[in-house]
Image (cartoon, rainbow, N blue to C red):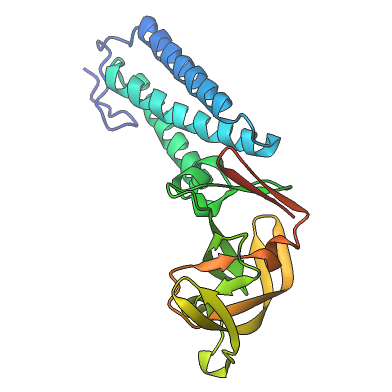
Length: 243
């Protein structure tokens, strides 16, 4: 009897039956089938997007397909060591790739899970409307992340007091002298100049804006930003900004 331990920690057994080839073939069919189905779903959802955004969408869905295929194979496949190892590595690499796509902030899946991150390409960045129909945008202002609501009715970029402090302004040094009419009456704003605003492929310097003295919930991305872009469009619930 051979008592030598295998590299995987199981005692070797020459009499142990090998996994059947038919099971390996079934596993590969499952993988290919799931990948094809999910890729088709991604292709349908990519209608109306740019080529870069479509490629990002397909990439994310292919990773999801690999994870799903691995899980299916792991559950219903032959419990033989070789098949379990294959399914395990499919799951591991799929999760690693999917995690990278989510956390780098530029993938389609990232934009779907957190719409304010947007779906970026070299030529544009696209945001999906939330349930209320608003477009939430996350931008870097003077190096700090700030969440905005896109508002074409606002003549300027308007910051809340909290966001102004976050990017380095001392409220006591600002002059709240510019009146503005709102649904809650007249409020006063302080003019400021934002050194740098970055949003995906977009980078603007010295953007005019205001700090609102009232109790705003979210800062507004208004026309002093939008007018400096080469263009922007709203179509099918998507807002696309072009540098």
